[in-house]
Image 1 (cartoon, rainbow, N blue to C red):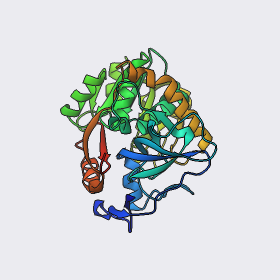
Image 2 (cartoon, rainbow, N blue to C red; image 1 turned 90 degrees about the vertical axis):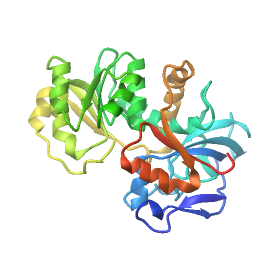
Image 3 (cartoon, helix red, strand yellow; image 1 turned 45 degrees about the vertical axis):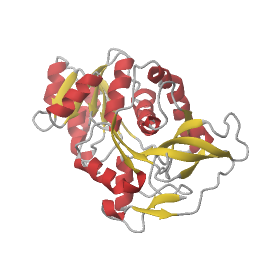
Image 4 (tube, rainbow, N blue to C red; image 1 turned 180 degrees about the vertical axis):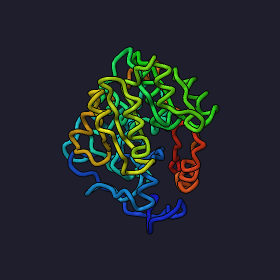
Length: 328
């Protein structure tokens, strides 16, 4: 098969389409013929040399894919060769074939085409695990989603609205904010022109956000706590604004607030399987009913992954960027 390899770390041109050995599914795994993958910020970090795959994972980038089951490893039941699936991966999505632990497989949702399904596993799993399983967003509460026009953001808006929450977003410029509004966002904040702490307080009569989903990290840490409501929950899932920040702990104590920070890639297989099972139970019916959809900005040939990385890093996209495998 062919895959996007990293002979050396660096810019987008470090991504090289090359012939590599076919993966072999181990016990409890299936082999998937990849139709499409999707680009995530973690892939950029891996390309730059800042995010190594977990031990035993594929060395190739790519945290999600869609395709068809080509072979079953020992001990696998409940799935058949030829089944159309999408999957959460620890790596290897930028390839024509990938071995996937069976607990990380999802059927393609009813009414969705196989290619588009590649946009779902990482975003749905990240949002559901952090916003609902950890932060316990409830109907009637207010959630602030930073980076509302991103793949994670566009999914978070829709899922929060589907459970009856009020959604605030930050995004760069009126064009992106308009797209967020189309997905259901209620409070639109242009982070280039507005102070999100002030805007959240205005929109909530001074109460603040019950849940904040943050991809920025250190740069927003103290301001996020300022924007939280009493008993608010801050879920940090990204570090685009740095890794070291200062925090006024008195504000955290006064608000009886909580901060959690998680990554999905390195979690144990059992935890990932539990998240995927929850996504299948709670999110897949919403997609089948047309209440939640994948937002795809563009699709490019997988061998042109460098172009996709440039598009992601430009910050002009809305939703997910897909990689289409040759022959798909």
